[in-house]
Image (cartoon, rainbow, N blue to C red):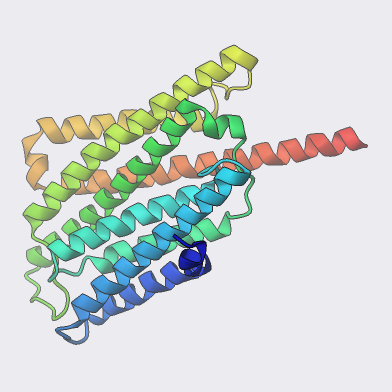
Length: 296
């Protein structure tokens, strides 16, 4: 195959799939105001085009990283991978629930993740030893998938609460605004929370093992009293507790309690990720200060 056949793919940029998701979100919002029979097909088509461009962009970037460094070795790559996972999840749910307004809940999160990726694009990449270490890879992939599952659980929980509120207040159906049934949202929320707990647990355990190995080899690991490790451990115990509560306490399965617990879990996860980003930023500043002092 001639290399020129795929040259057009190299012109795909982040703005290509970002605009695709933005247009799909605008079309989803337009459901609230008027009906258009062909609109759903356009939304699906634009979303799939965005996912394709998103995938090609990451694939080409990773190929380039392979030749000059290590792929998936920065928070920029991480955010784009999570946003792709959420976009694919949205597309699958939208196709299955084509009459429901799920896009106005999923697509803003996809665009927010892309925006965050842009804001932290210039952050220093991970060191090669961290990115290639098997535990580091396991740690990153597990947390990536776990965060994606938690976002899905969060969106399902928000939709559940909105739908339950409208039914409780006996609000009349609004044209263009239809949500999945409470039973479906409950099942989606429960399964997503279950997978998120397992994946995040795997990510945190692999991270702990990686830290143990680093401490034993060159004492370069993170202190166990570090705020990131303590908050991550608290998040793990919280998620395990919520999962056990949901599994054993049957009323929670059909009530709003599990939805509220999911929202709290998502906030908890955001806090832990924020601690991690701030800790890395502080470490980079300390390193710069050390180099500056050495040059004096």
